Length: 57
Image (cartoon, rainbow, N blue to C red; front, top):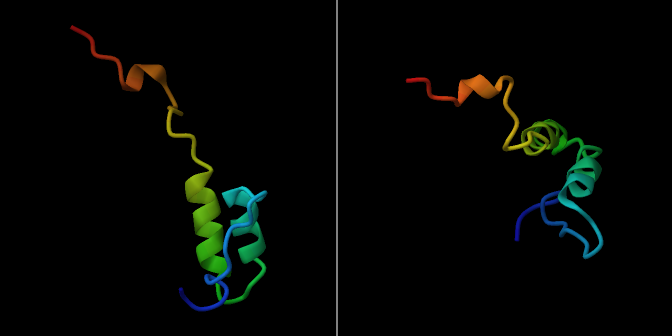
């Protein structure tokens, strides 16, 4: 299933953000966990400006 720390499973009452936060404490996974937290914290519907997706004719 993989090597520690990636061999640890997500607990039933744990959300992915908590799992990655715990993984951040492991020296073998610190950088990857920080990147994952940043990547998965982005809201998929967020935009800097609504006009970015607007089409003007």
